[in-house]
Length: 233
View 1 (spheres, rainbow, N blue to C red):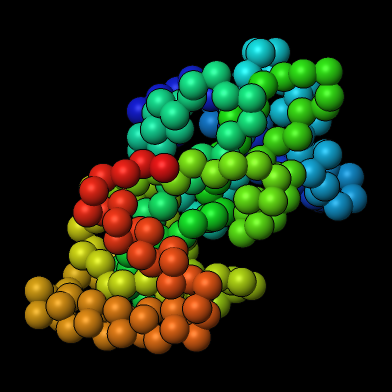
View 2 (tube, rainbow, N blue to C red):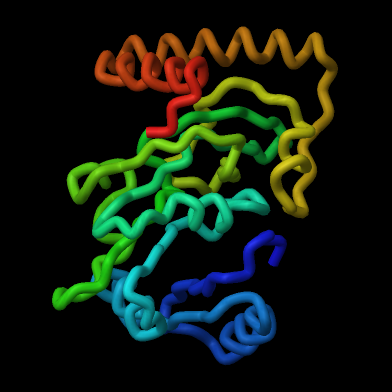
């Protein structure tokens, strides 16, 4: 509802097994905001793509994925559509985002293949593939990824019910949340000294994590180069 660009359709996939009260509540919440898609059985890439194909008639389609407990920046759709260049098949990844803990702590994180990735896709005789064609962390197996350097474009909520997410970033200033996002949860305020100490501690943990996985060293170097020289891909 807060997007600066309204030229998109928001689809939310739901399990088709539902009670009447739940369906009525979803219909109430969706009015003017999103379209609920009721999926029978497991949500497969084919089912996700078919829901898009049945609603889009343009020669090119851009699909973006996100989870129900996360958020995107106000200008996310604008930023995604600005990357369009009539590509046949191109993934778009905004490297920079934030994580928010259930304690209200804010962390900055960079991800080379994050869960907010987008796919620019030209229609052809074959069925639309859609952004759910593969796992987001292995999406490079399905096509090229354009790495875009930008301010924080996405926000992950990391809480006790997360299955795969964990806090793995550098402590960030809480005001970044309100600067880029419209969410109901408010981060906790911290002093400049607390922020600096937190940044040192979390940066040390991040370095230790990278050293345990040597293949990530190249990514860290690439991110650093992008931030210094302003490269976008």
